[in-house]
Length: 265
Image (cartoon, rainbow, N blue to C red; front, side, top):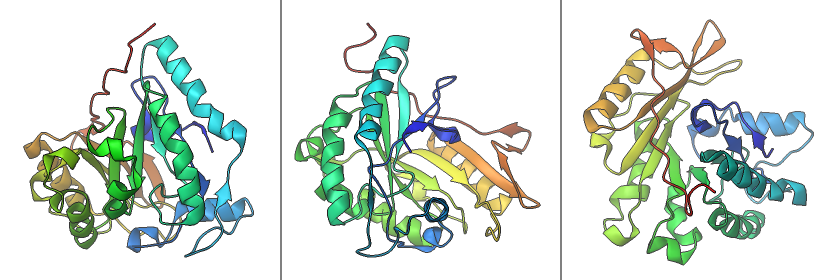
């Protein structure tokens, strides 16, 4: 799964975003994982890849060449592209196969300055120990880490791991938060250390409901802090609605992409 994606928050205007996975498979760690779309997708494809210590699917050489092609296309167009990594795994899972494949990722990130890498995790406590050490001195401008927060308990835990417990400015860097699936209201505590908030309801059969009051509260907290707010989807009568209209408009604010190293050629 290395390709253009329909995931709404990966686009850059009319430039489509991409997904890139270093492996397929993961271990469930919180309520957000209970109805994991990636697990269901993998099972439909004939793979059983979830669980502690279980197998992880390693991907092809062609798959690993895709980011260089995307970078070249973005540079030719003079417009950076976003890459969501990983939609079928967690880059920061502590697993031997994931560790091996993660080591392959970092040189590619460094070689693709026209791509912004959105590294979404449910394990922010692992990030500082798993990224290249030089990143902790000068965080790459084309990397934006993010963590999932489905309710207050998991926001508080992951926000502490990502931001609050690391006050040394040398090792601080901006985070985005994926409040998806939204499973309860969240007080985001003034959005400290947060550069972007993405919200979405769970979809599919048996989806757990997202209340619009939670969405409005998140939106208003983001607005008060000057943080871009992106409402990805909601579900009505069992149907997923992308970029829904709430209070007279859709909400699809995104942070500006950094100027790529080297500029347009």
